[in-house]
Structure formats: C-alpha cells, structure tokens
Length: 64
Image (cartoon, rainbow, N blue to C red; front, side):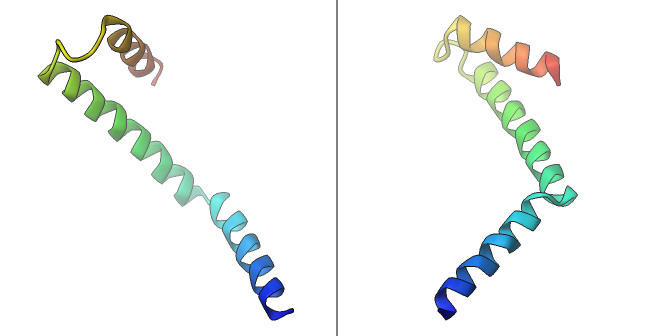
C-alpha cells in the first residue's frame, strides 16, 4: 500500500512540475540552443548535411 501511495505522490509531483513556468522556459531555452547548435554544425560541415535538412532548419529558425 505504501508503494502505491508513493507512486501516486510522485506522479502528482511530476505533473505539477511539468506545468510550472520554469520548466516551460527551460524547454524553450533548450529548443533554441539545439537549433543554434544544429546551425553551427551545418555551417562547419556543409557537405555532411543535405539541402533538405538545411531548408527545414532555416524554416524552423525563421518561425522562432
């Protein structure tokens, strides 16, 4: 019984954390950092990535 209660408590705690603004901000920041890193990789190794990959990345950057 204790294990079940502990599982529910941790489930609700995770659910609350997911909805906080800090977590959302962190996810947005990681998303921007990931896009920036992808752009740097494409600029560093242009032959490694296809034109389609480059186009999709630039579309993604333009939206943000």
